[in-house]
Amino acid sequence: MANQQGFEAALAVPPDEHTIQGRLLTVKPAEPLGPAPHRPERFGGADQGAAGGGNDGGFGADGRPGGFGGGSGGGSGGGGPRPDSAFKIFVGGIAQGVGTPELREYFLSFGSVVDAVVMSDRATGRSRCFGFVTMEDEASYRAVLGQEHEMAGKFFEVKQVDGRK
Image (tube, rainbow, N blue to C red; front, side, top):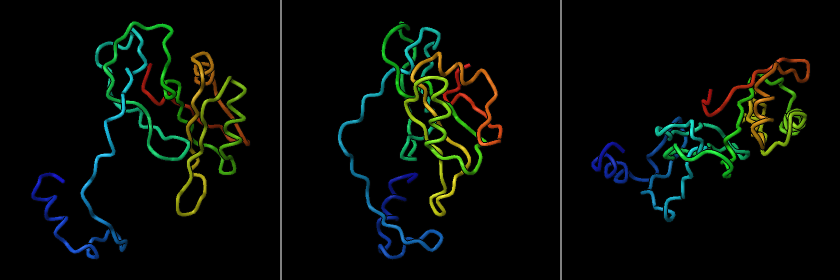
């Protein structure tokens, strides 16, 4: 809600009167689940600068939004652990018949795959012809980004999810 008044007005309407596109909604105040989760520094590389922050906008294997954000950037660089999304790749223009197992299998030829998912339409279950792959290491990540890709007779594109250059 934009303000307390809008919040109170939404709660004052009888529960069976909140609908969007014919679907009944349940309106209730949000309850905190507990303390906020720890947000690790974004990638921790010295070349990251002090800006940091942001959200990679990607999706996890369960189809829900995921990624890291809010970090302070900076850091000393080097051998610390990286978040799983550090080597996340958008895969667009996938052939209709390609599913998550085929996508994972294709990218295994470049190195170890942490996660792979082909996004599907909730209503129909059909592929939306794009997905995400997370590679385990930077060498595999760069190998994927450095070439053209074809699977099931169709060329498809790969892009960096996190906006690194």
